[in-house]
Each structure stands twice: as structure tokens, then as C-alpha cells.
Image 1 (cartoon, rainbow, N blue to C red):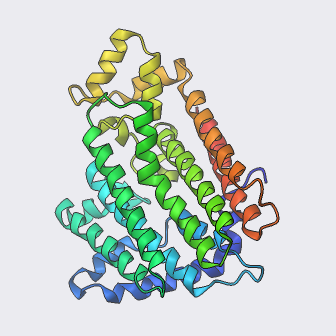
Image 2 (cartoon, rainbow, N blue to C red; image 1 turned 30 degrees about the vertical axis):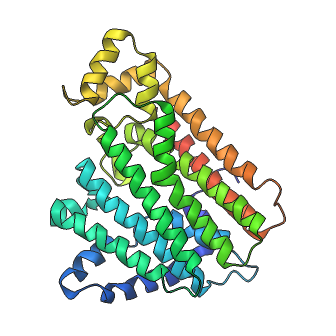
Length: 332
């Protein structure tokens, strides 16, 4: 499905996303009156909603109708994701998210921290409403892993003592885990076999890793207006992502020391210089290959399940990421 876009893939999910939007709007009244406006600001409908889409697609039935259990599960993972974004933007000191002020910018970082906590808490409350404890256990474990990944990344900020193995571990926890559990919940709640649930979960994990590497690449090569968030925050905040790791390996010693000083906060980040160097040393191609490898691993996880209804739909999402990667390449 060459040239896939989120719009084309999500066209079949319109009833599901409408049900999710309605369900999320209903949740606003569960928050205390004093913070409802703040919660409403975070629970907006402008995001891509990839994680809810993974829930719906992984649990897809032949009739294509939204299932109430999947709507609730989608709301749970979306609230966890939104909470992580609120906290991410505080740590990154980002001013813009989805083409508007971040919660930290609008309400202040102190209030935003607690707002993120409130979103986390409500997600777990919703997870606890399922008749089985498995959902709450899975979401709680994933939330802990996401937070652990963010903590590890935060502790490594401003340091060049980060290996590629460290980087993969961090993104596996902070991003891929929520992709994985989204797929797991969708397949499990729809009654899929244990083997297929695990295959779909593996797909989600690899897709999540691919998506995070792509996102780290887009922080250097993306279009701020189109992507809808502040770019260049990784270098500015001392976050050693794969594009910078690759560049560090390729630079001569003097330039490597200069880049290390920028990452460690000893000198201002020189975004334009680093972009020129990335072009000179072929950094985009090396990182692009890493994204493609993870996409291929995601698709391989479903190779034995061609007859299952969700399989073809999930692969459309991996094609969307391929298309986004190609669009990013056109900017290089």
C-alpha cells in the first residue's frame, strides 16, 4: 500500500475514533471542577491517536463496529500517552505541541506535573473497571515501564555516556511498551488466541521502536509547522538520540569533543552546523536503515497470521511509517 497516509488508514476507524472522542469527553466530569479545564486542554482530538488505533485494529472484527471494551481500552492507553507528553514537554522545556502551547507553557511546569499525574491516575481508574484484573495489571506494568524509560533518559541527559544499547533500551521502555500493550489489549479483549495476541504484541513493540527512531530523526529534519511541535529539543536538552550517536561515531576527534560539550551543556547547541555534518557523514541514511529494520521486524511478527483480519490492517500502519520516512528523506 505505497503512499499510505494516516488519513487513508484511519478512514475506516472514523466510528471508532468518534466513540473514543465521546468517551474521553465524558471523562472530563470525573476530574475535580478546579482542573477540568486543564484536563480538557490535554484531552484534545488533534493528535494522530496511533495507540488507540492499534487497540482498534488489533481487535478488529469482521463487522468493523466499535466494541465498548476496545473504546475503553483505547481511552486508557491514550490517557497514559497524554500524561507522558505533558511530562516530556516539561523536561524538554518545549513550548509547542500539536501546533499550540504545551500544558507546561500554558499552566506552568509545577501544575503540569500534577496534571500529568492526574491523567495517569484516571487511566488506571478506567483500567480497573474491566471485569478482569488482567487489563489493569497490563496497563499498570506498562505505565511503570514507560516512566522507568523516561527516568533513565532523564538521568542520562547532558551525558555522552550512552551506548546504542542504552538508547534501544530507553526507547523500548518509554515508547515501544505502550505500542505493545495497545496491541496486546486489542487482541486480548477481542478474544484472539494466545499465540496471535503475542504476535500482535511483538508487532506493536517493533513498530513502537521504529516510530521513536523516526521521531528522533524528525527532530532534526522535520517541518515544525507540519509536525506540530518544537524541533531541535534533543540537542538543546542534551538528549543523545540515534542521529547524534551516529554523528558522534563519524566525527573526527576535535569535532566530537565540540559536540560532546554541546550535549553536556557546556556550550550552546549548534543545530545548523550539526545538520551540515549529518549531511556530510550520511547520518540520515544510517538512521533510516534502523527505522526500516524495525518496520521489517514488526511485519515479520505477523508473517504466519495472514488470514487474521487485523493483520492486513496493522501492516497498513507500518506502511504509513514508511511513507513518513520517505517524506522526511525528501527534506534532506
